[in-house]
Image (cartoon, rainbow, N blue to C red; front, side, top):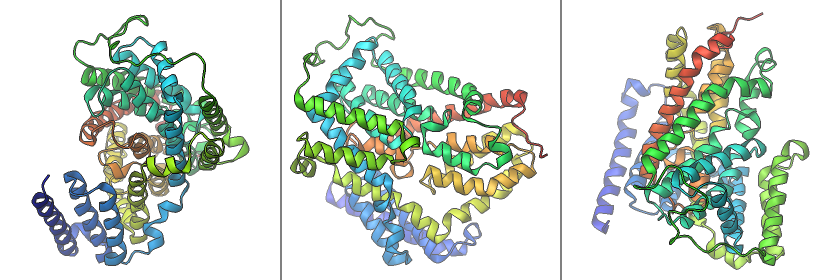
Length: 479
């Protein structure tokens, strides 16, 4: 895009934001929002337009957005830049270094070749392998961001070894298989994400006592089976290369010419050091409930060990780490603090009250309507934990008074919060996307599949309703 077009789009984006901020107070639809809140929404709207048009680097637009929140809307700096002091951002910093170390040492390539050897070397089977890998390790590592930053570079290596070009459909399909595989198991097994524990904490005692970890998982099996099968089919149908068979043998290789040579049997000393560090990381992540060392602390310790043992140098970290991506992530996740300070999130939730009450009488309408509301709210509330905490604070009492089990309400929110139409709205997706420096997939294509994926999720939830009704968990009658 030439300079004149970038300037024109920037002017249009800024004009749209200003017009929104000016006319907003005169519209009944925005009654209750302050001028500062409407200004913040206008700023975000302008930035979204510029992100889509790519008039400037994403991180520069994000920094400009933060400056505008402070200068024009009076939001404190601590609220705007609060993400840079959170565990999520520091986990990503360390995890990016771990990913670089795995790639530099050759460990990433060795792991990719092992996975390629287990499953037949076709797109469909490798997609199944990535979904299976995410599903298997999911329950053992509570941090979704840690899993994404570990699996995403591995997925990119597998795509490269199979001869797929980055930002083309086969590579994008493998990325989606990796991401959805690790994410789908989270609502099923509480230990697969801290979000599950957050949801469990919002349930009243008379509900949480009925839903131990095993009972929770059993009731989620119908949803998990449907979403897993339909998601895999959709990825294969939409992203499989033409002429590539569904099945194959381990001895045959469709992409022999593109694949790299198998790694030597003997590991180098650097590779061994990296393997030990990663192994210890995984063990400590899995055992977090026992030693209480948070995932970001473990990851930062691993980063220190990598430098101390000579796996990577500080110069390499400085030159190879995607600092622009980390700045962008820190800025956009700060939107949650801005909206909380300005009361935008609470205003949105209050507007959803009448809708919830009108749909609560019909279980299918309740699940479908709440699912759609959750997807819409994800554009405003970018943290899934915050979304669940805020919504459940309002909806637990409403659901109990309506005879609806709050667990069902929470599960619908949990499942449908996995939205990635825009980069800024999902920290877990951001971790996966930027763990390979945004070079593996096109966000426009990912947004298109997001609509398909969420439709499958909602369909699977609706199919679960009659089973939940037969099990007697849809409704709740107080003692």
